[in-house]
Amino acid sequence: MACMRRILLAATVVFSTASVPGGALRVTGGITDHQVLQRNGEGRAPIACWGKAQGVTGGGVEARVMRGQLPLAGLDWQNVGTISNGDWRAEIPAVPAGGPYRVDVRAAGEPEYSSVHDVLVGDLWVLAGQSNMQGVGDLIDVEPPHALVHNFDMAHQWATAEEPLHTLVSARNPVHWPRNAKREPEKFDGERLRKFLTERRKGSGLGLPFAARMVERTGVPIGLLACAHGGTSMDQWDPALKEKGGESLYGSMLMRIREAGGKVTGVLWYQGESDANPKAAPAFQEKFERFIAAVRGDTGDPNLPFYYVQIGRHVNRSGEAEWNLVQDAQRKVEAAIPRSAVVAAIDTDLDDSIHVSTPDLKRLGARLANLACHDLFPHVAGCASYRRGPRPVAATVSGGTVRVTFAEVNGRLVSRGRVSGFSIHGADGAPLPLIYKARVDPGNPDAVLLSIGGKLAEGAVLRYGYGKDPYCNLRDEADMAAPVFGPLPIQAQ
Image (tube, rainbow, N blue to C red):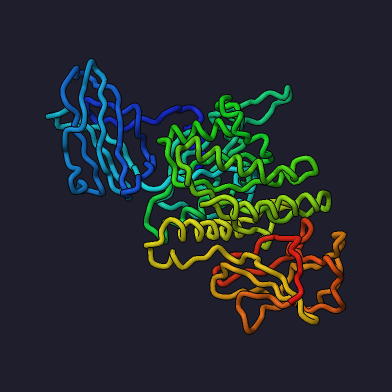
């Protein structure tokens, strides 16, 4: 109910203003309640704010930053701006990562002040892609809110993050609105919106679990920018459409980044299901790499971290080859694009025929947090030890055994029950029923041994996760799953 009330309010309010307990200065821009400000490389952020001065035409602006009942060291009342012709503007320098903070502003020499509440300084993360990022998990046993994780929702309102993070029907930008009977985009409001929010039973995602794990490990607050939209293709996310602004997915995402301050720590991406078809799949890798380059260019950060999920299962047999083609393209992108990395979802449970379950969305969030923790917080105890998870290196055959070796394993390879998910295929691509036993090599924690009955024909290859709904269970001791891969040539040892 708290989430529904917040969204109903956001549907009618464009920009929340700070409370005014009697001060002459009213905050109307730059900062708002519950906002998360992106910290810089020194772990600090300036706070720029402005507004209207009531009954004051000139003079100075003073501000302080409070944590609980005490001002931060060096950020007690100080002159930070000016008033001119009834308008004021100020900038508070170098506020350290952390919070929640209360920011107080007043006309110089006045006893009364206005406040902006529950402000955090930390890291901003974009959530983008299609439905599994938007979140279609059952709203049962969802990740609970965390005081240091806030969400910039689709109505462009900051609030403490709680599931569901995405509400397309009341978004500010028309690209997210559902189509009415006339095929026109139409925003929900009033009773229609209230009914939708009350009755929905799905909507949990991986963004909040990711953020909660990051805060638990690092102590740095997180701001999430909810930008995903179910059922969307790479063509719909085309950067060439950015000039359409809120009428395009890419343009809408950029608008939200800019409104949140223009800089973010990284992007979380989960998309590809809509491109797993004969027309789009062959071009997927090129489009995806171009998309990453465009986001980095438009945010002014050529090294912007980009972590994404390889598409998982779909209980549907059509387009199996294209599904696997997209999955393997996603696996290859991390090797082609620096500061990018993928996590696997092939071992997750579903809440319907294609959408990851709420418990396993939490697992995916933790997997993404492992990547970000390792790359961005090497100085934090435990973070540097994370590896990317099992990555196939080679398949070799000797006698009746195929050895599959992996890199980037955390601890050792493990499985629940016998190892499942591997298949051998002939040069023509047809599956060959040869594997009768699969197990982790007891003498090498980074390898799997496949016992085969019969001799391999020339050109035989190995696959893992073949088809759209395989049973795969290989992971490591940090719960990082092996990705779908193949065809991988099998070499004679």
